[in-house]
Amino acid sequence: MHPIAEEIRNCNKKCFVNLYQDTVYANKTWPKTEIDGIKPLVYGPENPRVLLISQAPSLQAWLNGKVSNSPDGGLVSEGNDFLINDVLPAFGLSGKDLDIFRENVFWVHACNCYPWYREPKNKKTGKITRQDRWPGNKQIENCLGQWLGKLTRIDSLNAIVLMGEPSTRLFPQLKEGSERFTDLVRKMEIRNDIIEGIDILSIYNQSKKNRTFNDPVDRAVNNELKLLLKNKFARWIE
Image 1 (spheres, rainbow, N blue to C red):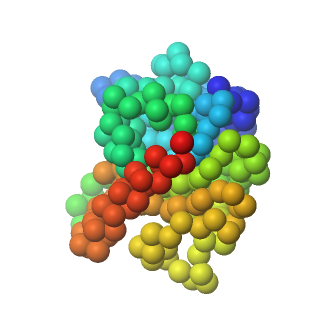
Image 2: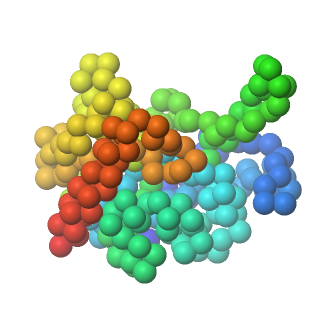
């Protein structure tokens, strides 16, 4: 594992501990005391070509990190459905190409610990629905913000892929004024003027749980982005 990945993985600030609670998931009760001790989820090969920054671990990935014996908490394992079914295809890869991903991609999150969720009650039905919580600006700054400078100075790095709105907050230079994240992504623009020698591309969060493309424009953009990322990824790892 890359020294910076190991440094992030061993962070013990436990920034979200005050939000954690006993929870039931996959027919199992997870006591708060167990959840408090889960390490940040991050994976970094020795000579990464691409830095992938996503939003935050899902609840499933976070809890799997408790039981996984791998150095990365199982983040880049065959058992990570999000990786196999959503992230790899965005790079033009499949499950059989997992080793290519592991060799070339440093995967980190804007917040590397699960920011938990809120349970709002529907005013009409009274039903409580779990909603994943987005990390706030201060939380992102306190988490990945403290390592971003080190990450972008990795010698082997050729590109940064920002998956989802929270990760783009780390690079305010990408947006023009009050430009929305959706408008930024729709431009499908690769920026190489922010960090010398490094391409930066923003894409939608590929999680099916976190995105719906009701707008045909967004569906078309996402498909074009996948083709763009597939072609650029092949060049970045040459």
